[in-house]
Length: 437
Image (cartoon, rainbow, N blue to C red):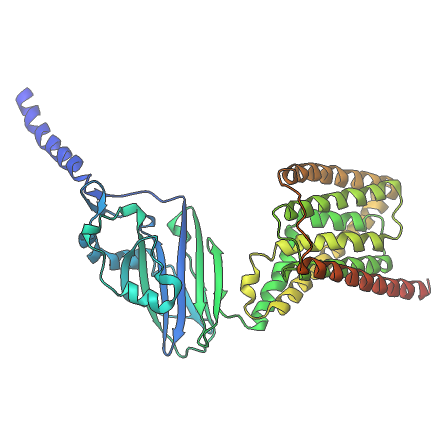
């Protein structure tokens, strides 16, 4: 019986030994936690070229051949590079010409590159590099320290068409950041940075595409911003009539538009402490508005909305820092469109809040008691926000930089903008008061 058992087990042990012996020459790996992908794109004649560079170790479940103490066997791997591109890159990248998705591309070339390679500085250098010979095994490259370059070519109708891309490389890692540069036929470039799957992105957007994108962004930003919503809530609680609301919303709109545009154009401090300072002041503005409601001192609220609107405008601008890249050559249009989206979002919230509060105070609780309760709840939340944000602010050195030309421009814009807002608000006040009651 023992002899029979040995006869059965010996082949199994032999197979296991072979597997262990071979594990040093072929290696697989799991999905990485973070990957940075780089892309270059250009349309030239009847051809759209896209170069993609990703870390080789983002190609998971792939047997990577090695030799010696962990060196990449490029000679063995080279015939498989086309299959890697076809499996991990080609099916996921979508290119559109005039909203029509292009067919599957031609795989023009593949390459293994070092992180120190700078060929992506220009498209011609990148094409020359990716089309050149592969590194030799004698260079002793480590498999998880090299990059994988893929050059794809799509047939197009004309280089002047409107192109857009959906990279969809989020399958390569838990977190994927894609840095892309698109070269226009005239020589200008558009730079983008995406996180995960950004959806379909126009590479050179028209003014209509930019306007629509930023209108949606402004609208969604209001609905997602709990602090801005709570500020609007505190504004509406004691004033649910349209006439005073028109005056207040006009003051708030003009004020935050001034600082939003000024900040987006670079006329605002770029110190690390500035965003947490603004976020702290926004929380404080909610506390102040709520306390005004509680003590019943909601007078000249349009002036209060004007002052705090300047602060909230800086907060709105922080939402634009990563998205202004999608404006293309339509910066002013995008800024104005974002403002339109913000105002549409505010109006949407007011349309819901005013009748809801009116019904609450009419059928559920007395207006004065309800105002105190709701304002106290708002003040409680905002007070905790202010404490949390002030703790973050305290970590920074609040040394104010010397006055620069940009700082003087910002101060001038704030003064002129405040004066214009006061003039418009006074006009509306006079107009409202002149109407028969």
